[in-house]
Amino acid sequence: MSGPLLAVDIGNTNIKLGTFDGDQLTANWRLETDAVRMPDEYAVLLDWLLRRRDLTFADIRGVSLSSTVPAMVPVFRELVKNYLPPSSQLIEVKASGNTGITIAIDNPGEMGADRVVDALAASELYRLPAIIIDFGTATTFDAVDADGRLLGMSLAPGLRTAMDGLFQRAARLSRIELAPPHEVIGRNTVSALRSGWVYGYVGLVEGLVSRIKAELGPDALVIATGGLAEYVVSETRVVDVHDPTLTLKGLRLYYERNVQCQSL
Image (cartoon, rainbow, N blue to C red; front, side, top):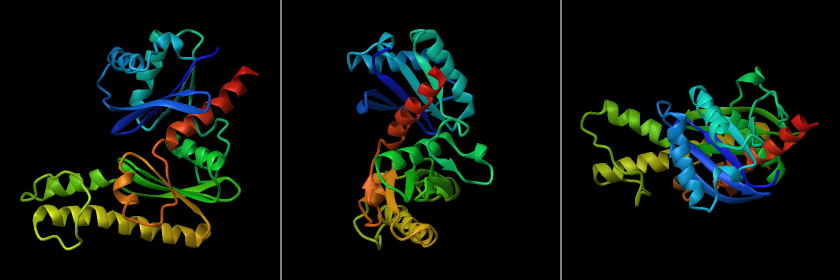
């Protein structure tokens, strides 16, 4: 069956979607993750997005799905079943699938689906060893060695997650927009918050990258992805590659590996 592949990455905050024509990403979008929303509601949103690209559900040849929100998986299974052609195959990313990498943590089944496809994309599209930093609800640092082994990771609160906690606990601090700071020494509350917010995370990233390289090797390629990466990437030199669509690309690669396996 010919036609575009739909890649769907469900995170705790956002759902990233993209369509591929062969290996080319032709469109990508973001939706809010809402486990209360029904499959039909997501179908309406997705139908509208596809039509902006002159596509319909009938065009979709397959779906590659990763999720860190278990409650959302049945929602998209039902959407695929009810709205996509019967010939459209849904492939869910699992650590037990044909990942193209070796998951070398204590319990491989614990590895998140998004971490798997990020590591696969780094392996096939860039070079190893690699450190993959994903700036999302959490900020994750994945370590993949030269032999394609996903050794593990470091986890820190995401930029917005950390500041949400501060705003909730500090009664006199009002929420502000995340924006690049103009100086380190803030001369008012807003500039002080932005300095600590952005430069604090720059320091976190640079410190963890240095420590991970000490274990993984100094030549490790540092790849940044995720919706909030740009705020940190622009302020540091430790990032070698900024690829906002790395996860979607990994979903395409995973689909191609596993749809072939299931077709044999």
